[in-house]
Length: 136
Image (cartoon, rainbow, N blue to C red; front, side):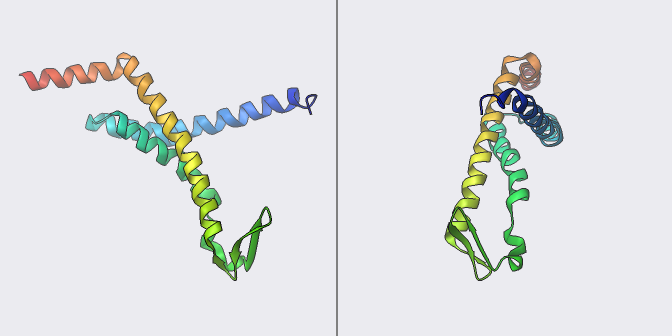
């Protein structure tokens, strides 16, 4: 397995970088531009929408319940998830756990974005311009 790592690592890096780049450009950039025009970029918005951006693509990929008629019975890891065409609680727990995991990674990304934005002068300039407009 250790001999396989030099071959797998570059492929994993490219896939991970492409996924993160697409999330940032296709999902995060439009939200940033909308919130910047509204002048309401704050830590809560960054974390909440980071969670949504992290969870939304996974939701689209693993939402098999919308086609439940295709699965009379389904099991993952030996545990039944669908029985007689209906999703049982174990199936919903698995689904929500995956959404929460990816959403939390997105929330961490949203926090990192907010921290990078605050440490740069992009938001500081907007905040100063907003504060000066209130003084006059």
